[in-house]
Image (cartoon, rainbow, N blue to C red; front, side):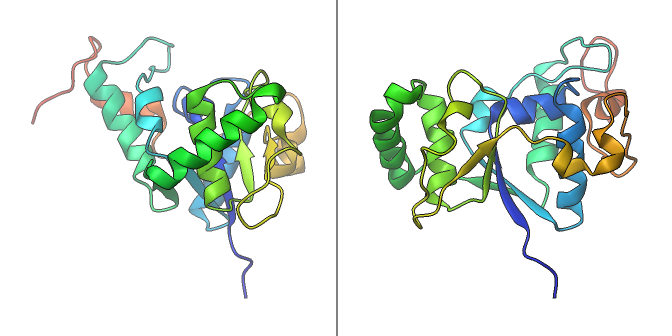
Length: 196
C-alpha cells in the first residue's frame, strides 16, 4: 500500500516562483510538482491566492497580458492534485486568532495570516514559503487544529533527491506542461491571446 500524499500548503511566493520560473525557487518547486503528478504530494492553497498571484512572465521575464496570465495561473491551480480552499468564516476567525497570538513573532500581514490559517485549519503537513520576514520564523510556534505542529519551511534538496542537490544542477522535466514560458507560446508577442 502506497504512503498517503504529503499535504503541502503553498503560499503566494511559491506559486509566483513556479509560474515565473524564479531561479531561487524553481528547482524544489518543480520537484514537488512532479511528485504531486505522481501522487506523492497534494498541493493546497487558499482561494485568496487569486488576489495575490495575477502576473505571469514569459521566458524573457516580460509580463504577459492579464488574459494570458489568468490562463496560465488557472491552468496550474486547476490540476487535480491542487486543492483550493475557500476563505470562509472559520478560516477567517482562525486567521484573526493567529494574527493576534503570533504578531510578536512577526505575523503582521493579513494575507499571511489567511494562508497560515488555511494550513492550520486543514491540518496540513507542511507550509512552503520563502517569506523570511513574516512566516519562516514561525516554524515551531504554530499548532494545527489536531494539536500537531505545522512544519513551515523553504523546500530544498531533501525534496529533490541527490541528483538535484548539486548547486549547478538544472532539472528539466517534460512532465511539467504548464510552465509560463511554454503556455506563452500560444500568445502573440504583444501579449494578446490568439483567437480561434
